[in-house]
Length: 293
Ligand SMILES: [Fe+2]
Image (tube, rainbow, N blue to C red; front, top):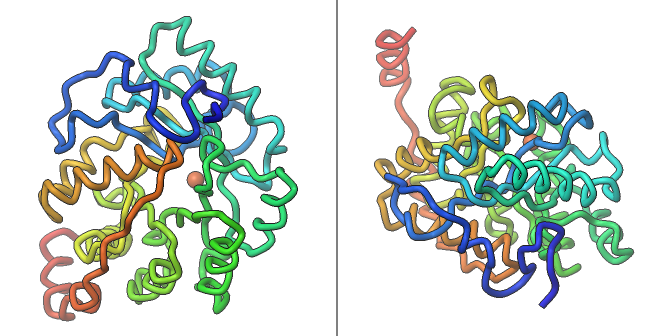
């Protein structure tokens, strides 16, 4: 068993379960709350500005019940080799401030089959050194034809892509079924907590709810950039997810997040195609708009 930069094992049982927990109202409270997506590393991208802000973000995350949080800066804006040292420093700061949270390394890459070559060269910053790698669509306004091909290629290279916040992209908002190509190719799908709660607009929320209830979304993460404006909180979204998709599914999602950071395989549920194709009528949308303009 190898160890990740945080001291968490990168495969097998997780040492972080010993960190003192806080009671949680969301299902699966016995499973440590894991957030696989955040921009905590100071001064490298549009996330935490400095160490003081990163520390406040860690406090906010811990108060929300998160015990393990991945620092996943944008790949184009940071040298991946700088990430482990930055994560070590964040863990030192958290320990000194007695914040009960463990930071693990990661990186948010643009989806491309070339990531497989980086992986073979040992240069890919996966989530805590596991086969799971956080990827986002390369273009905000386009669902590329190559998504399925890229995911299949990464799977062949021994990686397990985690697709970040597809619900935020306009093509997915117009046509949520697009995400099936990623799921059926073997990717996990991560929703932003803020999307599910409506902070990224009505269209992102609709897509998030549809993907969740169709079991075509497998994780909820914060994608935190700031302690208040884009905070590292997931518990309210998990509670909302339990109301929408059932407590059992949220327990499964919490377990899946834990398995990811410990490098264990995750068996994905079969997506409900009918639920995904179910669209609100224009009349319902107009009624919704009139109620909440
Ligand atoms: Fe992000």
